[in-house]
Image 1: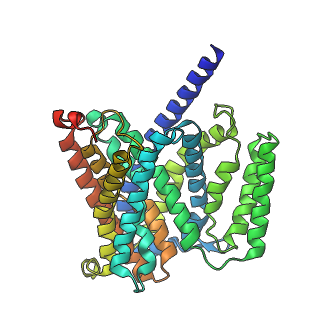
Image 2: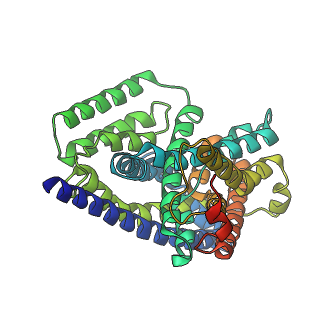
Length: 398
């Protein structure tokens, strides 16, 4: 009886956190849209020069834009890591068969866009941008999806959350492997020593957050100078913070609960403002026809739904997973379309992939247009599909 009670409590905690996560991400998506429009308008107005210069003000030797991208985004990645950890222990990724569908979908949604971009740009100066169309913006995508309310099944929203979280993990791995610079082993060694020390604290049942956060801050500084992108610290730290039973008193729950609003309503809006403070050149339309921009746009708009659909079909066809309740293949295609909203992570990878300001601006324009198209087409598709499967689909046994 006691075990059942604990199980119900754990389920309630997971449901509460998921609902809070969905609410915050949907609101954050709307705020991101508003921040993007405002930032682009200001950058291309009469005060555009002053506005863009503002984001290059130096803070502790870093421009404000770099501080947001390297420091504040580490907190974003910390929250992502905490959510991945929760999903692995008590969420959608806990049971292998249930987890395989979003895992396969995410892999397809990363590989196919990357291959499309690489196919267009192999051997050119744009080749390093292959990681740009691999990413899905969970805040934007969820914000758009939740605007549909009960017109789509709840399982579709949960599937998108799981897929986007795995997608984020994939993007983190890509950043660590392909977008890190030459390694400074002294700094990296100190960071690794700190991580080992925090892991020992976890094993010793130390539950106070302060040692982990302090150690994480020092590790972030070392990673910043190690050549490996400093934001990776956030994900590693998330898995070192004690999860325990995942209850309301666990350090992981407490930190996730506190960070959700901070990330959704402060960090991500600041990221959107700083990274869309771009002066749109008169030649922007011509730049969309370059292989650089085409690789990004086709990767996000076509590569994402094709990859997600095909790899999901493969997982189910092999008998490794099954479609969630009330979801149909048309819903899977709709999620694939919405996954083409790349914004935050795509912008982030763009800054890592290129040094040229012109390339960064053209990539950001391609990302914004692709995300807009993906949102419009995805919403329209899902509105046409509706909530319930057709009689024919109910009879199909894949």
